[in-house]
Length: 281
Image (cartoon, helix red, strand yellow):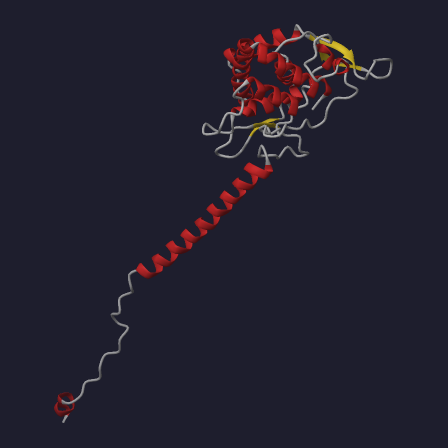
């Protein structure tokens, strides 16, 4: 995941860290976290999409029968943490704040789900080469406006300085902080012709997950080879075997049921005896 999609830990108030989280944790992280881990008992999100916005769209479930694992604000924070969009310290701060502001947290969750539906529709159309619907684009732009109000250019390294470069970061507290990098990820992808061309939808019949096809020959078909890929290959193999068996069965039945050729002319006529020789005499 690119650096510009990481939430800047210094964006949260340094004077009000949650209990148990040191004030030093409010300073810029030395390096982005890699592979945020789930807490014990926490749902582990599938992050095979290749971009934060696609991974977030995939939390909607691979099919209509799939369970929704974005059921409360804590789930939203968990997704952002596992996606390296939040540091663990920032996640702790947001969870603590949400406990005291349940109505605000519920409102953010509603916004998150609205954004998720829009992202699924937008990138499904992108994958299919279709035009985007105005309503979905408007929903994304609503969140873009909210997110960019918090966007800042910050030093890429700890403390800044020449040679280290700069990146996008975020400032200002808010329970909607997990949405900011997700929204910017979606905006960045849409305005990039190269990235848009790599968006795919899973080829499995019962899966609509989205992903970036970064393979050399652009031949990736499945959101995950370990799940949909293996299952679809097994299903297709079964269908081929079954088809061959049915074909052989039909051929055998045709042979058995075919009408026999007429036997007329195939039997030798019996040689006359008895009265025939008496007449000759």
